[in-house]
Amino acid sequence: MSSDETEKTPAELLSLPNEVLCYLFTFIPPHDAITKIPLVCKRFSLIIKDAKFWSTRIRNEQSVRMPQCELRHPDYSPQKSFYMIHQQNQRWKDWESQRIITAPGHMATVDSVMLFSKNEKLFCLSGSRDRSIRLWDIQNVGSGENSEENKWTVAQNDTAHSGWIWNVSRNEDSEKFYTTSWDSTVKEWSIPDGGALQELNSVNLGSAVQCVSTSGSSNEVVCTTFARRTAVIDTRSFKIVADHQLHKKAVIGLAVQGDKIFTSSEDRMMMMVDRRMMSKAVLFEYCPKSYKTSLSLQRHQLLTSTSDGKVKLYDANNFNVVQSYTVTGILGY
Image (cartoon, rainbow, N blue to C red):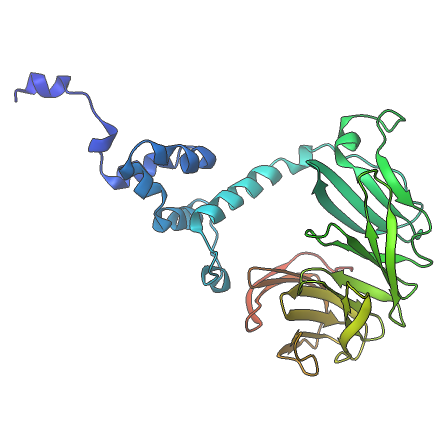
């Protein structure tokens, strides 16, 4: 072939080596790269589905080192992880310019809020020290001023508890939600299609109830109290079916996954017990300088905040510290 014919031959993407194609694909928005590029041809599809391609991008572009507990998780996907990291970076990169809306309604400190969707609409449920709970329509809050035609609060109960409301949680399957209070009760609620808040059940735990979680076994709710108690409630009878008092002070942090119940207390202990045998701790950690003020569990990763201003990430399988960050002087509840 002559040099003139070579110059006239058009360049094709398929003639490029995989290394060059991988580089070019990094300039394509992640959503398009995941959903459209694999449809072009089999070769492109194999590149996009290659875990090494996305693992390299996580490490080089996002500067993220995935913890071993995440890498070992059976549902771990480098492609999905990269996309979620990208989405969070996009969401928060201009956070200082975001519009802040103050929604008046409660008359005292709001200690708990929970976002959820129903019938393709986004809601926020809030519990306050004024002893009331309110259901907010997020779309109405963002679309204009509070008015009869555009009500921000679509349902409320001003006497939900006789004490401060500490926490709220929602069961996604049953769509029921639960509130805890200083009045020592845990209450079960429903939100009918009409929007009214309907109280279904209540149980007294003997002392102020702090945390509540619906992430455990089916038909069970786990909660903690200021009197050292961690209790399991059967939602069918709404009675306490199991409990322990392994902590020596108020239990202020709770995270549940299946049969694993993680708690933290002002006694500076963090522990995990098995729901099937709650008489002793399976894992525990004692920290002499601070205590864990809150816990969050996802995919074998336990995220904690501490009373000395740190955020610590643990491997939930063994309580090994994966990462630690200093945030501020003192972290509250």
